[in-house]
Length: 302
Image (cartoon, rainbow, N blue to C red; front, side, top):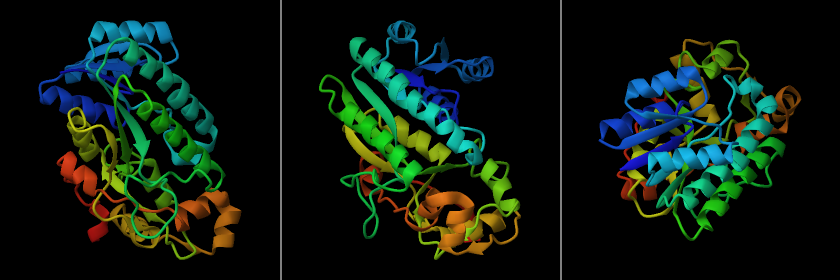
């Protein structure tokens, strides 16, 4: 199958391209960087050097790739979550405007399917784990709400397009090589510096997914029924559980514990939301339709 991957040199892009090539697909990876282009070529992919904001160039690249499926993994995330506030506007623009150019080009070029990165950790608050019928937390704390609205717009735009099959993958927090949540990642450094506390009761429930498991699920989404899927682990865990375990795993001291008010003063309303209000996602649909078998985060058994 001819597959065009946008965001191909990012955290999920590289393992995704590697998995696609290994399974015999003809892959074109889109990137703007020399380092990314070299990495993709070494994986066995064709390389499209084009910006998502260059609509004519993007359409030409898609036509040349003869893409049957387009996978949108476009992000503009910083190397550390500490810099996310400064990066948020550019990330939103890339996903909405750049991704809009990509979807329009895919439709004009006759691609049959479009796979969209979405979020499985910004679900609307409620009891227990939320399934795919649950909406996103568009009324949450300020930055969380903006991110949730971005994903909601992406999903609505894709699923309203009647001339292309749409698949929205609501990934959990990525962990593993090349991500923030790895012993050599930015969040591990923050934990070692005691910068990530357990806020209040630490009841915010986080859904995770290993980057390679996310890539495998994305490959399965090439042929699964269209729709929305939660690509998350089997055991979403509250901050009070996962953060101390993560700290032990990366050789850090136990994280500090602060009240919600102290957390608000240190990190704002968004920090309190992440620490106390996030809702976990149920993955039964993905396990059935995508044959999804996620591993457990390595730190949770520590």
